[in-house]
Amino acid sequence: MRIGIVVDSACDLPMNYLHQNNIVLLPIAVRIGQTVLPDQRDEAATLAFLQGPLSDQGAEAETIPYTAEQIRDLFLKQLVTDFDQVFCLTITRTRSPLYDNAVQAGYSILNEYKPIRQAAGFNSPFSLRVIDTQNLFAAQAVSAVEAVRMRDSGATVQQMRERLEQVAGNVHGYMVTRDLYYMRARARHKGDRSVGLFSAALGSALDIKPVLHGYRGETAPVAKIKGFDNAVQTLFDFVGKRVSHGLMTPVVCVSYGGPLDELRALPGYAQLRTTCDAHGVALMEAVMSLTGMVNVGKGAVTIGFADELHTFG
Image (cartoon, rainbow, N blue to C red; front, side, top):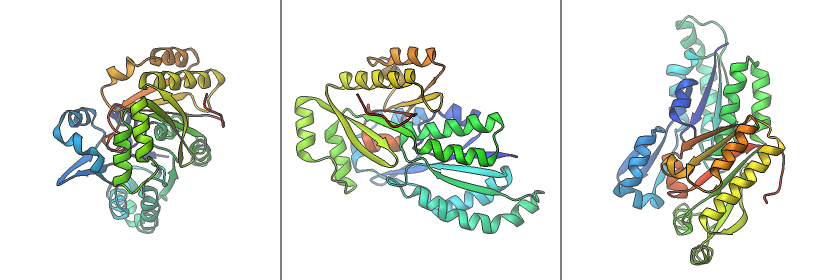
């Protein structure tokens, strides 16, 4: 059986990994003023954006995910003949309409695919499963990597479905951002009051950086640490402890809102890589998507892994 895997632009995996593993991308467009930039997970284009004049207007950007009609068209024109079963892994539905759009598109796809497949010489049924990864950015990528691992190991569709839903409910995402004022401006533009003016001002004045935790569709601060370097080192040290304890899947995904050389130079990162290597855990790094960067700002770090329920610290 030909099993396809579909993710959206916010899923922080390198483009070469997507290509090597035949993962299909649902692009998210980013509109800044009158300019619309398609987020195709092109790292060079994303880094060029950081150096350009539009990056200063990122807090006012509008992200535009594929509509139900666009998803339907992609499947009927290509995917229902390329694959027999597709797993569509979306950014958490609490932060984007993409999951609901994909579910809505699924009804049309499953009602309309038969004559298209028959014309292409396929008489077997086509199946689609939409899974809410319940997380964002690097944490969203954990489910996609597990889907690839299971597909390559010869798992059945039922085994993959059950496992991917289990993993999605146990992925922990963490983020440290450099600029709370940017986060506040972005939140206000989107009508989200979760980062108040006083908190942003206080955090910047004292150089306090919150560590945010994403889990099962919810995001909340779990620590406040003085200094960005101290915050990321504390985060990397904590992730290393969880790796040593034993993860649910053998991967840690990390993304950075800038060149990866800057990520690799951050305090604690080299030790995290050493710990992952020692425990047979892949440390997969990617430039953060354009979609992610306009939401959380330049220089932010996100990291994700599948693990039992735990307390940060």
